[in-house]
Length: 325
Image (cartoon, rainbow, N blue to C red; front, side):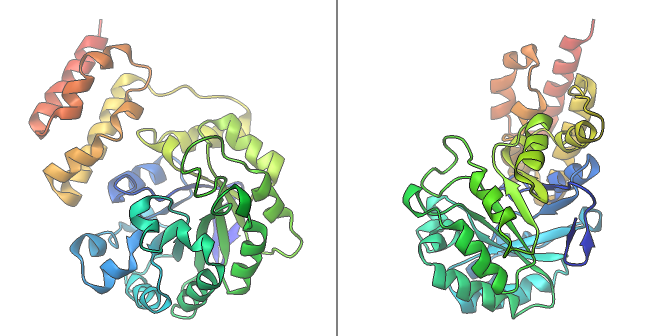
């Protein structure tokens, strides 16, 4: 499957953008373990224009992460145009527009999924972004604002007409946030719409190789994007690929491998953003890294409240020591 000029192979798997999760350290691991493409954390167009340090820091990536999309969000076509030019200067493979983030701090400012209530503005923003860059432009969005306005089939056509080269659809409305089950039926309708000629990528609730296979087989999507299920589990991409190719489920790696990769992740994050912030943001990953390890419960509170890199290392050693005969 190709997105514009970039060949991602057959049935590619993409890492979804997640705030304070999919930083460069984690994206590198996901690429290493099988993700075919990654997306940055979402970046505020206003933050870029106002030279906010955090926003500009999110533009940075390692060449080993390619292919990579820089994702931007905002509510104003002109601000998004300016932000696109700034994002292009970082030389990613794609510019991705966030029309799907459901969190209040984004939607209350008219960005993310709030645009699902104002399709003309969504179209204007997409045209503004596509016209401002030589890079291919993609979009990530949802089924609609709420149960009564699941208008994604029409939206997808209109955005395609604006010049985007692929669309990712999360199978929930904004009103659902992340509750309930993702509904892939409408994603399948978009894919099977004869008016659509760009890749359609499905997203939502894919947390196992079996589910990924079902989404490809049942709905015919061109690619699957994985978000929350990858947190603390960068191996998931490789496990899905193995299952798609062989039908065999690979178990989670052993504890020593999990600790080794967790440490690699943590130390790379510290280099990227400093010890304090890296330790705080890594807390989202530990439950994933140590899933189904019963003795993790004994140190869970300590690892989640620890603010010192040296102490964290000693806790990791304790986990390994407890597991060894």
